[in-house]
Image (cartoon, rainbow, N blue to C red; front, side, top):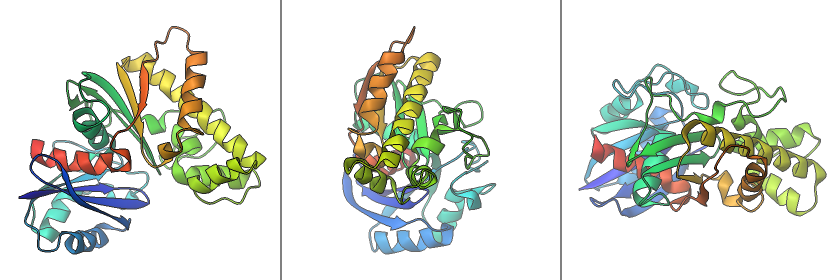
Length: 288
């Protein structure tokens, strides 16, 4: 029997088949669409494999008891729905929904860069910014299933509008698509996070300013995490974190320079990379 992990992202969705011990069998990435599109993609990916269960991530608030989404800033069609139940009906496979930050954190804590550490905070930097605090191998969900939403903590005085309805959130300065928006606002060409990083390498002053602001925002967020939960290790992954030398590493240095009472722990790259969420989704459907 195999298990399916679905990391339902704001831009792309990652599909992963895993065996009983959690080892990856094969993976695939598709553009994100609605639940009907997702069901078609899963059928094509799974083919004739016998899948025992699936887990699907939710980028937003999630009631862990009912599986109903409260608010998903990047996938608004999920608001008020139970995506795992919907997919289960379409696919004929039992499944569970799991917060995307919780999924990535679960995978990194149990199988990745947090192994052997009882107290880990995991950030996933992508189109959206997910986070979760893992204690003793179990992510803390919070009273309303919304713990870890570090992407929607205000980190800049700039009046950037966030998809959550707030202003100046971490996501507005370092979210994958938002990096392109910030670059365009400064007269740059816009585009993706990867385009911004490439422009920095060529000396583009607007792109350099955008990444400096992103570094500042992440530094402030790291200090807030330390002040609130004081983890033993911080793990940072996600697509944006693949450019660690120009985004994450400078942010960590700034956080250490600005720390007052804070004790910044080891900050390490995610071992599972951009596939942490999918791994975590597959693990979640075994654990529940």
